[in-house]
Amino acid sequence: MTTELTLLGWSLVLALFQVMLTAMFRNRETGTTYNAGPRDEPGPPVGVMTGRLRRAQANLLETLPLFATGVLIAHVAGREGALTFWGAWLYLAARIAYVPAYALGVAYLRSAIWMVSMAGLVMILAAILRPA
Image 1 (cartoon, one colour):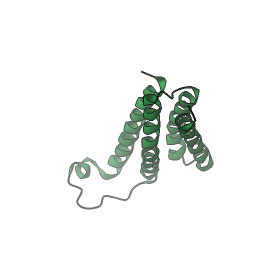
Image 2: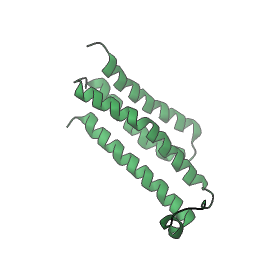
Image 3: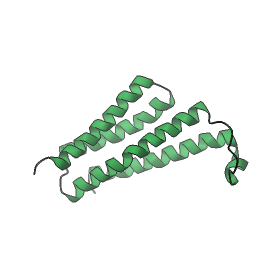
């Protein structure tokens, strides 16, 4: 399996981790009885940390389909190389760094980290779309 596909797999692990982390924080706010029930009524207000984790998770889930599609297209088309290798590493490393940066509320650093992940995506796209 290529490095890019392996990094895609680890990106899925990150997504699962973020889902579970957000659920754990929300469970602390609502309690297990509420979460085990039908949740017909709104729960208690979302706390600051849970809100940040939710937004970080939503941000990952917005870009993960683009990353996955790019990696898969590059693999199927035989376009893997330095651009896809480093693009995939940049994307995953930045997405990992994004979680604590968002959770801790480090605004400008968080935005810079997001831009690094976007640069990784652009590198993968460049590899796919460059002339053969």
